[in-house]
Amino acid sequence: MTLLENARIRLGWVKAHIGTKGNEIADTLAKEATTDGISASLPFPKSLLKKQLLQISLSRWQAEWDNGETGRSVYSIIPKICNKQLHWSRECIQFATGHGPFPSYLKRFGLHSTDY
Image (cartoon, rainbow, N blue to C red; front, side, top):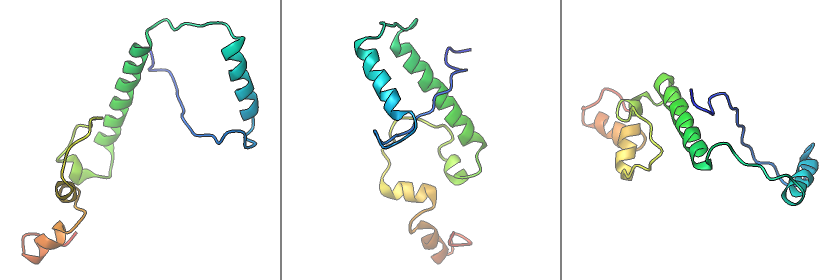
């Protein structure tokens, strides 16, 4: 069991000072904490927490990819998710995803039964 398995983190963008309930208070408290607050330290290095959060995120993403209903044609080509950029050409991406001219091209030459 990792340190962050039970942690719930919700990220969202809030427009600053536009009447969002509690936003001004949170801003004031954050400013006070930087000047008057008590110094706190994490029991673990920040790098460890970041690594564990990344591992949890990737495992959840993989589980969603494994059990999802969309993208199954791409799943057969790329079954394992990765947060590294793939350097595929535009044509390869279109072919793998079935978007672009390839399905109709294959249908036109009798190599595929439909143009989907």
